[in-house]
Image (tube, rainbow, N blue to C red; front, side):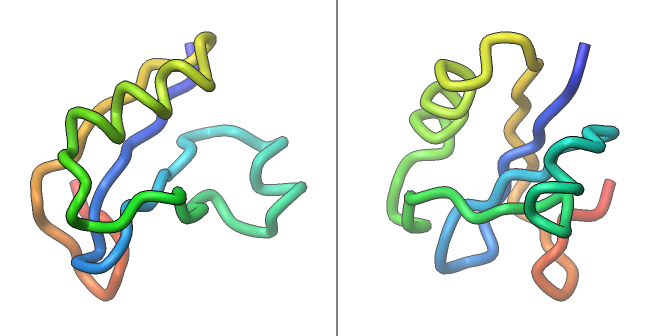
Length: 72
């Protein structure tokens, strides 16, 4: 099953699609912005992304970024 990690860069929520060649092909990156600002609760963002991607496991990253990219 594919996995998506949602994380905040301090201004907006981002979604990193792990091992998803189609997303990389379409957008040229594995990380795309969501329409949610950092003021939106993480659980809400995770639930919304999950609803739109039912074939994926969506996880909420801890509030740690490195140059705008989540490190795990």
